Length: 496
Image 1 (cartoon, rainbow, N blue to C red):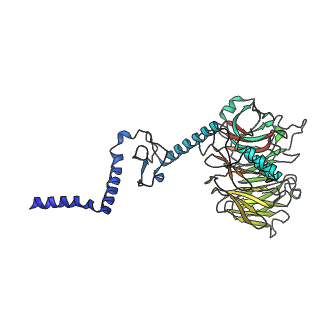
Image 2 (spheres, rainbow, N blue to C red):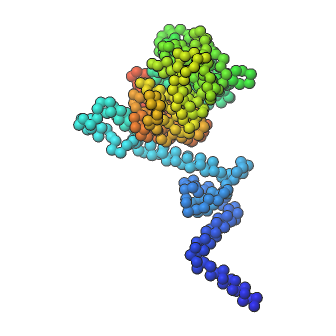
Image 3 (cartoon, rainbow, N blue to C red):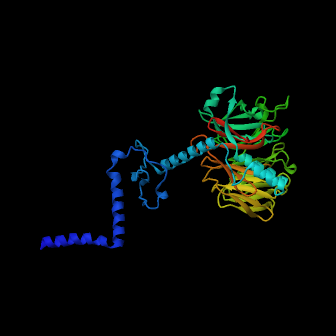
């Protein structure tokens, strides 16, 4: 009796899979159970490097198990190790880095093999010329599209940097580069191996193909404080100084320093240039800065602080203070209208009417809003539009007359970094480097993504490239191109 009942129960258990729903449900349970047991009984395979071509999210048929990573090539699960004391820890961050590195190497290989990349379908020089001859393109449109075509064909070449201290070039890392108005000089902020930062100016007049050689002029100025913001300043003449915002450290307060470019040997082509004025202004914790070329705010600069904007006259030392509701992370003066545009951590963009006193009312001329912290503000030449980027990776073009977004540029990557935005109306392009270390170039007029350039070095949040684009690299007779500084190297993407 006992034996027959045991057999009935055994046969009954076998009869259940005849139900299709139960068969599917049971197979899933066995699959999950086997998956959970697999990592425990396969410790001898933990030293194998799993493929990073896809993760759990990329395979919808494989269940997502907390604490495990499924490798679709090996068809098995690997335990994700949270600690750093393991011999070969496998974490989600390391998997993501391997995937990004594999993608970067593939893109670099494609660029080296392909040579020329096509930005749009049917977009080539012959078709543009034919449309222009037939009258389908006016001169302005033809020039703009020709620039876009040449941007898509730019090729990477390494620039040889000469210096009086070659050992410093091998150890110091580029942190920031900034071209002057004529694009014949490049101001650099370099992170020193022993700690701190030092400054230099690279003369770009030797930036000519095929031998791309430039010379870096350095000085003895050295700081152990973080450089928060930098811009060129025109005090004695155009781009005669560099304005630096330094963070305070310990008992030393923050400051804004005007550093004469003449301190760098042969940095300016004008012979017999007199040494400029070196001065420093005590300013606590400046996040951003801008120099005014507006005649109604002559010889003035602004600094964006925590909940405050300061406009300072270099000649008289007089200051105007404007209270804000958030930290000011980006600034730019308008050239024709007496306005100072500011981008805040709260996502607000507002303009200050410089004709109003700091205690008066109505000094906010325009108000726009992003959903995240604004990291860059660029005013277009006609001063009817302003472009802004934020920490959510959003890039928008705003019409100041209607205060509405008229265009959005997709693809930029940012999570929390203070990244700049570069707008070049002459070529009709927008350039931005994302937190993923990819440099992206868009068409200014229709927001089409023209080019995605991977970093020549492995992707790292500490090695985000700094770029500078110009219509005339190296001066008035120079060719258009993109300069990219990453780690100790400088690259040039010139028009072919």
